[in-house]
Image 1: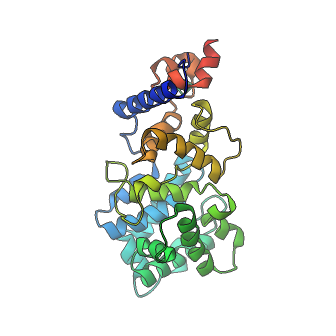
Image 2 (image 1 turned 120 degrees about the horizontal axis):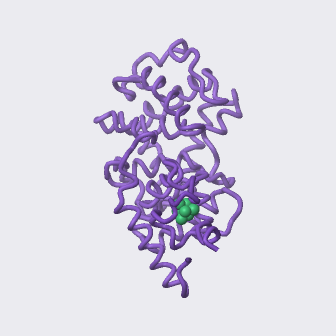
Image 3 (image 1 turned 90 degrees about the vertical axis):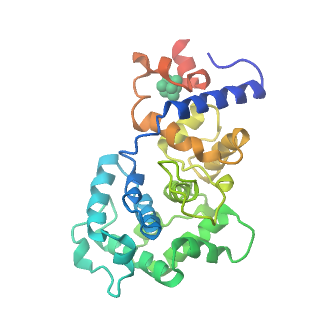
Length: 290
Ligand code: SF4
């Protein structure tokens, strides 16, 4: 049953459920998460650029993502940063046939070109992000919008649908799942999943990467009442996490979404609910028990 009582007892139940989830180590296995790609590169410069590439293309089915990224990192290895910043850019022929969903090989090549320009002109992607902030106090939505706008501007007017999908607009309401995922990877301290590469952003300011699994969990656990999967829903769910863990609100993202990704939650009628750490809070479970 859902916990009785007011917001305080509900909050305590949320903390207990989320901590149990973390303690169970459901987030311990990286595969099939695309974060395994930046983990392959010990050099921080390689890991940063690999994280940006892997997160940007983290859409579609997990096997499809994995297959595409294996091929793309085959082009960029052994050092993605060196490959992107070499005197000669990655030739178009190197990505022949390398498309992902509706992003064509031309789009992939253009993407590599703008990331190259970012690295060459700013040294690191973190520096590019900070330069966009321009000395103002941190504001994650505004700073991310400026960061992504930089790439859109460099991309130019060709292939506009691919450009706008690869570099979305949080200022226009996009939840920016893939880029909040990138920020989670590079900002949260290294814990076996996240990488802890950046100092430009505090973990306190991160926003949850809102995918299907997180939106569903957010609804079932009563973390959001919004129906539209947008930036405001991401902020609302993050706000619920922030209330119980202000210093690191997105620490629950990886284990919570893994419930869906690893299919712990696909067969609740067969008894998985009884083994699910967030069951006391889950509206879906309550319904099934009634
Ligand atoms: S439906 Fe069951 S398994 Fe899925 S999140 Fe709710 S309690 Fe957990």
